[in-house]
Image 1 (tube, rainbow, N blue to C red):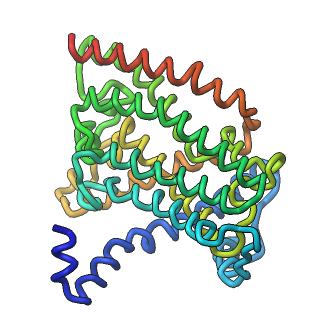
Image 2: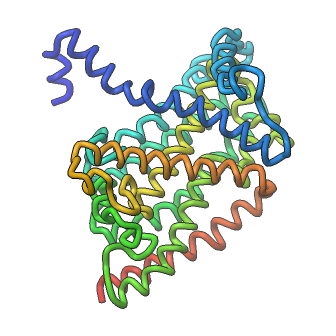
Length: 357
């Protein structure tokens, strides 16, 4: 059907469809990436008792814009021994895997890309493309540091996807849906109905679910943190060991694309975790639109809470980066296989028994 539409569509219709698909990128992801880079530098500065960027714009507000202009103008360097085709393709694949995840994420009750029934499974599947892009970049760089960083990243992401999926299956058993929009609606607009507090159920079932859901929330947050290579799980990019890991050989705009994909991933996992356990776009205290009879205001309130929860968890990730030391490789893998996977599997079995009995 899609190919029939493309065959019969006019040029203007195709251009309009492309612009519509790219709109979230230019209206949200790019401004967010610029804001997040500045936020990270400011957070790290204040945590280290300094100010961070202060010279370009008021309190350094335009610093990241100056940085992106500089990166765009830099020479695109490709070494003679690089595999040029895959070297150029790698950052695009990593970005596509990160960007495609936003298609199934509900920004509010009215603003969502694709309301597909397999939303959370689609996100887990499409973000797996990132592993292929990272491996491709590390291998095509023909650099030992890059290849080692790419191999570390692949092992880490594949390992930590297991507890992530076990927690996701647990949530699916409780909510009865894989659609993130339906999950958010199921948790309703008050914080005591959020899944981290047992969801909109009552009695003994809620009492039994609360501790299990709190542990599940911690497991999936730590697992997704490892999947985006953030401290203390940043061994694929370990500057003290691997210079910069899988993107050591990249410069200019290709390097900027890797950074854009990383911050897009940080926000994506933050809003996915909030959609699973913290009501997604739902307000914790009700809506002003309902209070004053202004239903048109509710989608904008929902978008505010969606963005607030996402940015809060991004801040937590930055906070952890400047607080915790980096795991060793053996510690990182042992933490996943010896602790997160067994705990998440036991929780899955217990929740299965609770929902059946």
